[in-house]
Length: 301
Image (cartoon, rainbow, N blue to C red):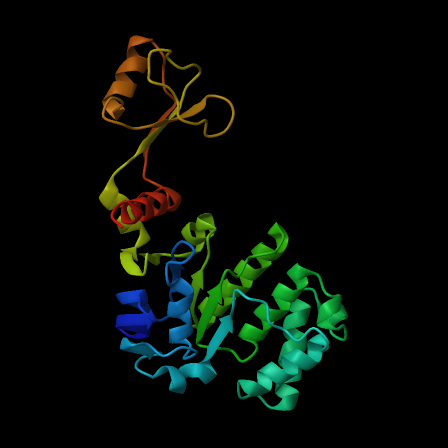
């Protein structure tokens, strides 16, 4: 197996505070990988060490099948959570400059930047200054800058922040194209439904420590079903109750507990003479897993 990113025993301290504590994980080449954690977990610090912005106190980072961070940087694209474009500069000038920093010639950088502006619908704004753009438009320009040099590893920190649903979908489609080209994508976000849609593997850190790492489907299946979805023309009154409705009409979702099992639910419908059109056990969502794991870490502080 070749890895786009290998992190082994990574540790970072600021004074007496350990902000990243002996974490290890790998990202396969060509993968779309979710790197998750609550605010203050050490996520952004880890990303900055991967990008050689910060130096670790302990541990090792290898990128793109064995390169050091410094060696790999020309082949890495990065979209930071903080927005840092020079507000008085023109969009096309900024993209040309950032492309040249990544090794493109002046003409290559401009051509590639304009091509990408076409794709995100901002070509007509190419000669505007950044200060004249909306927040979402500025985000798209930074996204374009992260792709301008055809990177092999793309690292995105809260990439969909400030974007409307249409532009979120556009960005996802462009990232899918990049993955098909062979790029590896690592992204961090608090919108866990996006992670479930795009990622097969994830890592979760909380309070500076690694909590979960692996295939998302395996993580879910290891926990078993935590709910049951039922579709029927009516519903019995003697169950502990539907925790939430999964849409309108005859669909109800029951949250399982010690007193409410799948057999209990089936029995209640049978005794009420209600014929089911659907009965499905539901694995926990990534949001459920995130809340459970982070809550456990905080309970043991």
